[in-house]
Image (cartoon, rainbow, N blue to C red; front, side):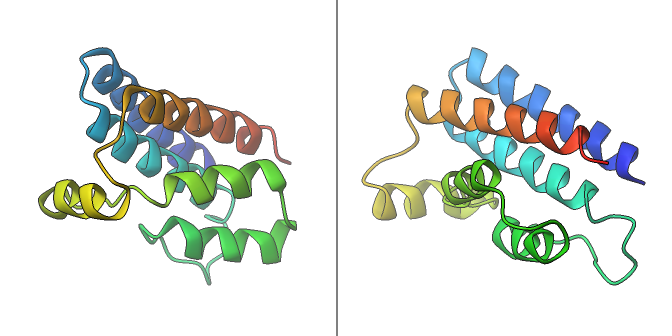
Length: 125
């Protein structure tokens, strides 16, 4: 199950990279968050008590209980959690809460964090 979720995380990461390349920074950030969420879930997928959620912070809390705190993952989760997953509320929410939409720098950071998170989690066990 872990491999399937990691593969899906990589697919979402590739989508984020394409969005970054074409200048769609908002969707690059959203797909980076989706990718990271799937990667974290992959570390928990074999646990029958844990069901997939799109809330990255909640999944990380479960991950911490199982695997312990990880500063690198925690930083990625904190940064990526600000990007809301629902297209219809992303623009006004981000513009209000974060004083503007994601920038190219935000998107680059989001993609890099998701990529590092996938690499780190794929090396677990």
